[in-house]
Image (cartoon, rainbow, N blue to C red; front, top):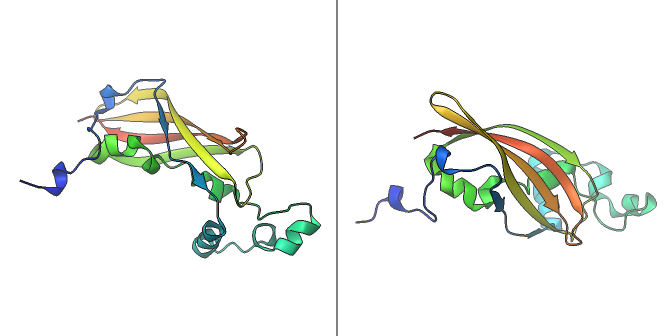
Length: 154
């Protein structure tokens, strides 16, 4: 008999099932004008650096120049098998840091990956620390950082 709780895309894993060094990848995603528009609508940011093509040409950019946060949101574990493996054991996203290393332009395709760097146990939860790396279609590292997630133990 079907139940929504049993409808899993991948097998669920507990905190102790994960290991330092595991890597999770998100599908490639091309940054489009539609994503620029959606980000502008959600953020309210209308700086000409990101939306005014003539302004951008005057300062040396041939394409729309992505916000750092537009680049950052491409590194969401929700786009990877990891979020589905954690399922209801994922309590929350508790911390992140980022370094924006190279420009991202409209038309670039981004490839995000996450590596488990540390696993900390507490009494009822654990913390998973992931390093994040996002590359463009030319294999250039455009973003790196850390993310921390709180995970139920059972």
